[in-house]
Image (tube, rainbow, N blue to C red):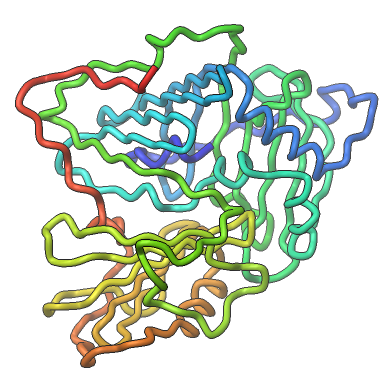
Length: 372
């Protein structure tokens, strides 16, 4: 569900009340295979109409958002509006994402996300993932006043985090998703506090009136984790890997122009079908401070490296061991002159802010709406 939360700002972290457990909620009559429960949850997250209030906590942040989601005529539409901090909105139609945020704010919509892993799960993928993860039932609980079934996804090695998902017994919609660390500690969490399931949601719910002179509009198409990219207009990737964590492969490749017109940045998305990592590379054409070595912010790990004239940044919600293996084994086929003038940069701001698409110029306020 954290596709929504990529427009999130900073706020004070507060504890979230624990869910009710088996003593408070009757057990379901029929046992369900935990892997198949997640597949049903994935389908519900795509095809159910729902609306409500969601909270996010992690990285010392606490964010509250209102969400509306509709499935109609084989198409998804989703709108999220931040209820805390600066005004931010996110609109989505199928795999097209539009983020609206105040000017001067930099962000990346390439970071891995919790809903991204769940929404693309299939029975076939669950079978493949069992080589790297263990799926367990966690019994029953209660979220937003609704009875839920719990499933945990626990990694079998040190190269990936785990997950805990609580799905509504009636609709199968995931109402709570947690990213968990090696000791099952919660690193990030998304949870509904209010949820409803209307039969219809009007088109007007996905429209928003903003003065776009005061906002940046960032648009991207989201990759599919089942994709295996073939050479196209982008050609072969300039970065290769001698070794990757077990199960990881390249699932997306594209090149983007830098906003200042100084060149391009290549983006590779690596995934094992559940966890994902972004790799950015660009020519380091002038002396500047760049990330080198390993850094982190909460659950997000980062690795920077200068290879010849290229600076490569690796960012992902995976343990440091995975990031380091990827970084230590990357190769640039045609390195230029060595320019190792960078210094370690603390990971206290988005490392990918230089690749954000430039804002669309505007002269007058205008409504922004998803296509009907």
